[in-house]
Image (cartoon, rainbow, N blue to C red; front, side):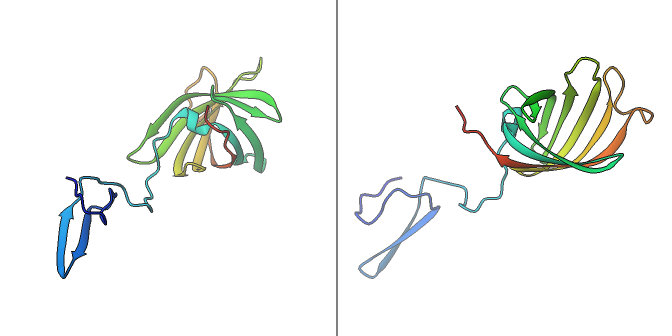
Length: 160
């Protein structure tokens, strides 16, 4: 629906009312938009992880933290050195949860960290990880240890 009245402009409002010489006219706009203050998190994919992150985690020795860079190919680097690949990425929009495996790539390093993280925002993920070894079931109690984990984005590279 359109209106040629000079006061009315195309807008994202659902209802528009204008006063015309004492009469109040209301009509429904054909444009719908989400409120500007929406709290919905956009769809998350592996490429959403691209950028620089602070990773705060627990280990058997205590708490730790590292700054990592994840590139568009899922390469996870620490201090400029490629240590892990992000593989098996999944996202459930209903629960706002991401799952991925951080698999070591260095020869002789068979570590795997299965991350289960709640999306607090596109720049903050909180949850835990299970650690295990390649070729073994991460769910096996003899092979798995569960630890707290939090990723906070420090810098996001611009999309190309």
